[in-house]
Amino acid sequence: MTLTAALLDPVLRGPGSGRPLITFYDDATGERVELSGVTTANWAAKAANLLRDECDVEPGATVAAMLPAHWQTAAVLLAAWWCGAEVVADPVGADLVLCDADRVDLALSADPPNGVVALSLDAFGKGLSGLPTGVVDFATEVRLHGDDFVPWAPVPGSARALTGASVDEVLADVRARAAALGLSAGDRVLSTRDWSGAHGLGDGLLAVLAAGASLVQCRHADPAVLDRRAATERITARLD
Image (cartoon, rainbow, N blue to C red; front, side, top):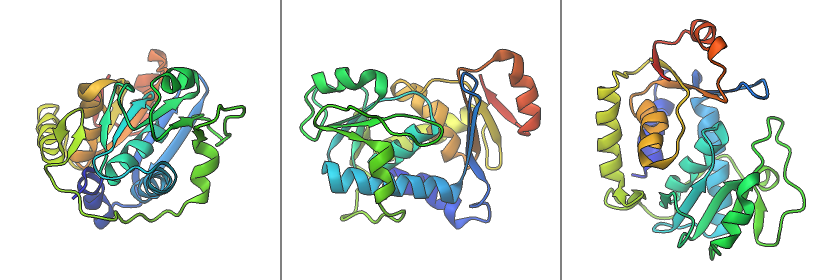
């Protein structure tokens, strides 16, 4: 079972698949995006089809992620794991690099053999223009792909998933972290944490999903509005 299936299948098979799974705020832009479990899975599937069909991401591939904590980041990370890839932080030596607009040059300098996928992270889905050769514009290309994904081959639990750790090891770690953080199924978790590195990603995203909770992720968080937002979103746990 892929890491993505292990995290999303319990949500999709449960009665709460249509409830919010990821709610994203950006206080710098005023953006708010809400994704149910089904919508999250659809975005991850579209992105997985893009990574596999256009970027040759197969089991064992390494995918570097240079992206902020964002709902689109969650989609492409889940997509990479669905393909059986290992997500790493360092672009040097990676087969493919996922990056935002500010880090396209840095991604290209690593010369990944499978190229670069650039995310605009635009609230309205606007793509990036004038990209160099070898860079795929995520916003434009992901729309062309289906919202169902089936891996070509089973991914064993021993396969690497995150910076050298296997699927089984990552699952065990994030489930333990969910327990340590006091997260449980049905929680609404407000977080301002960055997803950089395995620890940040583990606590800020994966532990929440592993617990069966839903995430309210705040980027460029304005401290003055967090308490009011916590009340509005019926938050039961905080990671800020």
